[in-house]
Length: 206
Image (cartoon, rainbow, N blue to C red):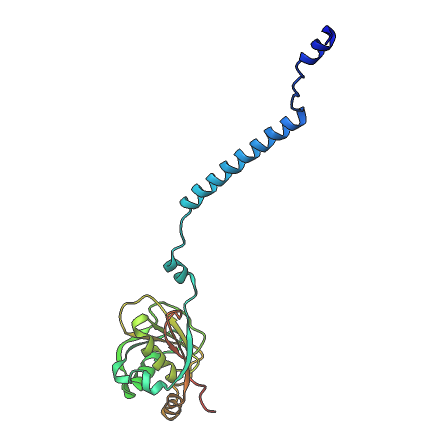
């Protein structure tokens, strides 16, 4: 073997260096993996801190039902002897409250006060029937005696009902017509979603 051949055979082969684009891809993949891990961890912590929905609040958020049924007013409303009423004149007609109070008393109602409207209102309709939450059924009974009257609920704590006679009032409904209306089924609203149980008087017969 010649000296030339020996030197060629013993020369080590050069190592191949990784190309630049492969190194760049490796770095980008590593950055992406680290970002994905950090993002996943942050979602886990956020999910743990998120407030859980309260089932009770979800139920309360739903609208409460208010049902309308047909009832016989004579069976659910109080009798007149259980109703105390104040009669007021909300017009310029002299004696209107006193005359109305006499008829109501003859029909069994308990008269509390008689006089001019303490609210100094000039009621143009038939009448205003004013009552508190405890007097709702008593006000509905009076509505049968005063067809066309407006029911007005206020914040009074007692059961006494006020009747403020208006300019369109002529006379109380006849007792025969009242008995017939109270014996006929009338729509009644009831349920937790209602502002209060209410019975609508049936239209009086012509």
